Length: 279
Ligand code: MF3
Ligand code: CO
Image (cartoon, rainbow, N blue to C red; front, side):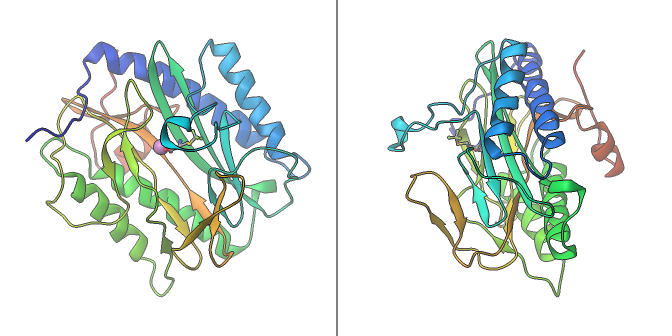
């Protein structure tokens, strides 16, 4: 079956690792700066500095017109509290206990990286918000753990959903308007990777694929609304939301999480999976 999924060579995946490391570095710098009193615009400026110092380009800046959206004005999407994704950086001031989702990407030598993290402003938030952020992070890793040659994309989707549903009696909303995706010489490539699904459905995973798993969870409804700026997306019921994403390469002997500083070694080995960096 033709799936249109781009298969990368080892050298191409090495190039994608360089983009992934720039993304990881920018996210760490922005996360460290996500303190009370900082603005979302301040964080975007740090993202710009990271890209400039690395000699990388932004895949977010001016993204959109080919899909009927206004040109995206930042290098990061910064979404606070009830904002789910695509928050436009600006004068909004972060406060103690807020949660801030930062989605950031980079292009190095034509190859893309894309990742997101939700940070607790000031290092802590309410128990409910903290649990939401942790459940979102854990569901991303559950999805990554299901990636292997021969598995189906639906197996990854199912693993994400099952992880999210494991927190009973808490019921998190799973945002359905946006999904994970393939990545390579463009930020968004086939296949779509929904955060819900059925095992043994969808395209088969094979070596050389690079996939972004990116669950978006809410404390309430799964419905979202887009704001008048044409980008920002918030929950329909104004409950808080979290978003985590990594770019992961499928290699012959295991996975390499290109947007983690350690390549995913700690989280993969904790789950009994093989971590397989290229030299
Ligand atoms: N990085 C987002 C994703 O995870 C998309 C960003 S939209 C942009 O797929 F306009 F900001 F680029
Ligand atoms: Co993405």
